[in-house]
Image 1 (cartoon, rainbow, N blue to C red):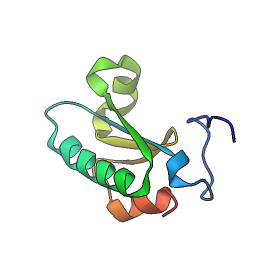
Image 2: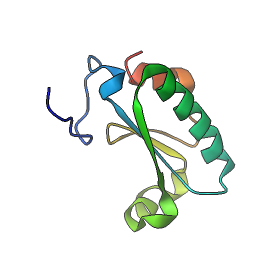
Image 3: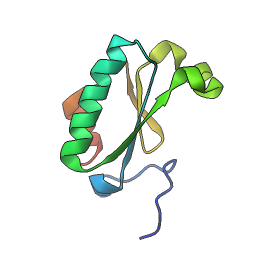
Image 4: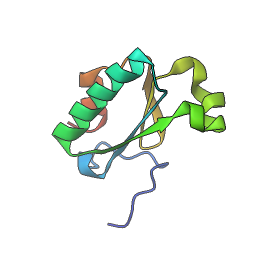
Length: 95
C-alpha cells in the first residue's frame, strides 16, 4: 500500500497505524493541554501517528479554527473541538 494522503478520509477498515491525528492548539491553553493528554494516550495505545500544530504560527489555521481550539483532525478532517472524548476518538481510529 502506498503512502496515504492525509487529506483523504480513511475508511474504518484502515488500521490505526495508518491514521494521522492532528491536534491544533496554542501554548498556555488548558483545554489544549487536556486534549494533548487524550490524543497522546489514545494514539500511543493504538499505534496511530499524531502531530501538534500551533495555531499562533499558522495564519490559515488561525483563521479557520481560532474560536474552536483545541481542534482535533483525523486524517485531515475535523473530528472534534474544545473537548476530546477518548472513546469517540478511539472509535474514529477504528478501535
